[in-house]
Length: 149
Length: 149
Image (tube, rainbow over all chains, first blue to last red):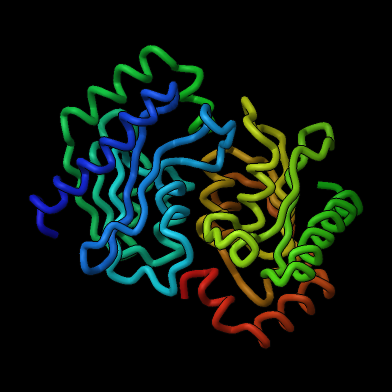
């Protein structure tokens, strides 16, 4: 995976996270890219905004991409290591690559995915870490609710 | 888990699956029950109806239940063994029990969940098997799309 490309794509996911934060939501964003680099869908966590616990950033991006015949060659880009729910999404639909902004504030299922053939790149982006660290510090109950803790 | 109770709850999931079939959709239904037996949410696969690949039966029932502080003691009831996406949902949110209509036509992640402390009951209900078998036979492409095959 091209790291410069991955960092550019992460910028879209970060913009989604920031949009979510601006709406009073949980600042996690994601984007799904096609094999040719086309942006298929982007989105952010909508628990607070829509009262919808099923819309994590990754599921929101997946949903926005609409129906696809195959996910072979696609890349899921997310600001935060995916929880089991979103890791299961990546595995079930055969999404080929996973770009993660950071896995410092939360370590989800990305090792499991790597063990099942997904190409995983963890960027440990300082901006992603800072946004989540500040959010979790100020909103521990909301964050725990979002990950079922 | 009380098997008679589980079979009664499965009836609600089956009604959801049949409703989905009536709408021209994929006939998988689910329901989420609270620790005290309250129905928290119910739903069915909405890929065809809403053009939404993120709405599997289990995620639809989870969504319909709205925001919950905890899933401890809850039971997810589904007509079909949950795929990795929906298995990840059950694990991440700490849903305690899983009632499965059948795991004959599709074997998802329920063994993995049992290994992670989820109480799993597979009923192998003949009606659930018959509905899925007929659907997959008549709509192989749609079914494969729904599980990313």
